[in-house]
Each structure stands twice: as structure tokens, then as C-alpha cells.
Image 1: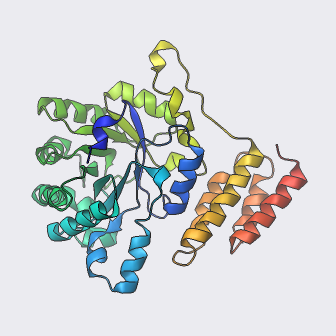
Image 2: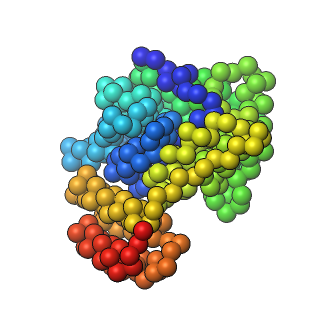
Image 3: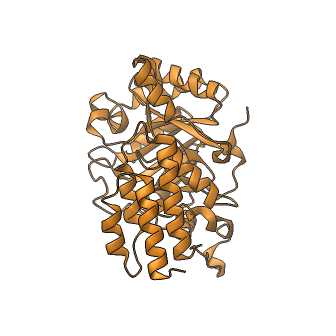
Length: 341
């Protein structure tokens, strides 16, 4: 099987894996509305490798739902977290069996439950184990490229030690969130460190791709940051909220801003944006309504419904809804009342 990372045009723009955000429903919507190019790479939400292998039948079935994907989402990497190489090997083997295009290892999540397992961000304190997990994933899925998503460090910036340790394990790509775990999102992302990561990669004569992540507002912003740092690509996360069409503008982003080309950010008319919100809600209910709380959709309502007259009042109404039928009724009533266009 071909290493898809090697075939991507540069710079490329990928969709960040966000827990309870980039689920199967939202990814399907993003694939539909971010045409013609869409994200260069999709990721699943992170999935517990331990849970996949050790949970009872019901628990495993729920986790398997997080690994569901459609043809329009390719290439797609299954993202796993664990601190146990044997579990990573088995999870990677499962990803290969399920037809994924790659395996990604989460080495940056600050969730305390995950950290208690020695996984996620805690791996930045254990470079040797991190290397073992990469090796285990490669062993379990010899036909798939293995990548990593991480940060600058745990309590402090240790990029100079941490990145070389990862590069020694030869992952196909490293997505670097330009903050430490301690900083969370409380300080601006330091893209100067993404530039330094590219330099370290060069010094080590590594072929691993470097993807910058943190505070990107849109494709134009990502394009500028990539040009400034020399990164191979950029990962957009929070910018996707309420904007499944975000990557539609990527087609014009491959020309440099330095030669005077402005990236035109695509924005559908308001009534279409609201109808996409309805579509998203029905899709969530259809694909995940039996295993996930409808409350998850409410963080999306906040993003879809802002920046226009009457948005606050509409948002308040949507926050009280309990199902997709109620959402559709309220939004359609608003469209008729306001004559949205």
C-alpha cells in the first residue's frame, strides 16, 4: 500500500482530530461541503487502543463506531491513544484490517483520565516509550504509514530533545501543536517553534513531514504560517466549528500570498448555512444518536448561529432543543420570518 503522505502536494491542509467534534457525522459533512479538494487528510477522533482490545462486547462496539468512515473521507488515519506498545500494535493491525490509510498516535492530549494511563501528553515525559509505541504501530500495520500528533513539551518547551527522539523513530509525519501541555490554549501558539522543528528535521536529515498546528483562523492564515515556517502543511482544528466548508478555499491557497494572491474564503449565504446546520443535526442523530448525547450538537449551534441579526435569539432557542426535528422546525421558522438570503 502506498504511503499517502508522500503523494500530497505541498503545502497541504489537514483536519485536526477533535474529540466529540470531528465525529463521523461532521466529517461526512466536511467532505461534502469542502469540495473540490477538502482536507488533504482526515483523522478519526482519538480512540482508546486498550478499550478496543479489552472492553466487553458492548463497549468495543461503541468504540468501533468511532472508527467508521466513508469513501469521501480518504485519506484517513485512525488515531489511537495508549501507553502499552502491545495494545498499539493490535490497534494498528485492526486499522489496517479496516482499510484505513494510516495510523496516528496521540501524544499531546491533556485529558487527565488519559494522562493517568501514561498516554496522551504524558508520553512527552517518556521519549523511550513514545519510540516503542511508534515501532509497535509499524509492526502491527506494516502496510500503513504511522504519524504522531504532539506538543512542544509537557510543563516546559523541550522541542530540542523531544522532536529528535520522535524523528529517530521515523514516523511519516509529525503534527506539532505549538504550545506545551501546561499552556493548553491560554497563550498564543508559537509558530517560531514550528520553524525550529523544520530546522531540526533538516539537521537530522529526516524525511518526516512537519505539520504546524495552533491558532489558525482559516486557510489563508494557514498558508501564510506555512510559508513563514517552511512546514510541509498545517492542521486546522477550532476553525472548522460551524464551517464545514472551510477547506473549500484550499484550492486557491496553493499560490503564495507573497505574489499578491488573496485566498478567497468561501462563505455560503446565511439560509444555506442554517440549512447545513439542520443537515448536520439530522446526520448526527442518524449516525450517532443512539450512543452519543444530543448535547454534543449544541457546541456546533454556537458556531453556526453567530454574526447575523437575530442570531442570539435563535441560538437561545436551539440550546433548548432535544432532537433534530425540533432544530429543523426552529431554524426553518427563523428563515421564513427573517427572509434570510
